[in-house]
Image (tube, rainbow, N blue to C red; front, side, top):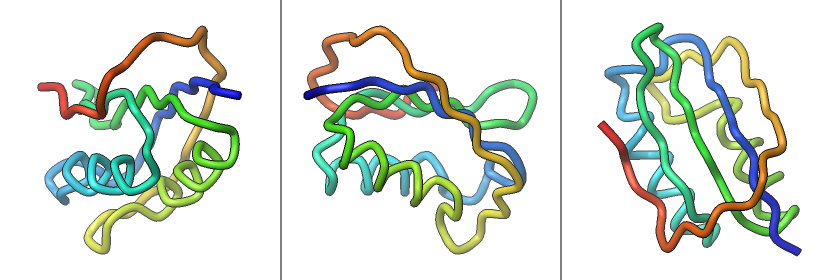
Length: 90
C-alpha cells in the first residue's frame, strides 16, 4: 500500500549535494516525489512509496550524504499525490 510523507531535514543540508543524493536514493528505492531547499536552510521532501520504501528512505535522510550534518528530521503523513518520478525543485 502506497503512502506519502513530508520530510523536513534540518542541519547542514544545503550546499552539500543533499538534493542530488536524495534524488539518487529515491530512484534506487523506487520512491516518487520531490526535494527542494527552503529559505530557512532546511530541505523539504515529499516522498511516495510503500511503507518499507519510505522507512528506508527516512533512515537514509537521518544521515544524508557524507558532507551533510543532519541535526533533526521530522516527518508527517500526507494525502497521497500522483507523482510520476522524483525531481529536484528549485
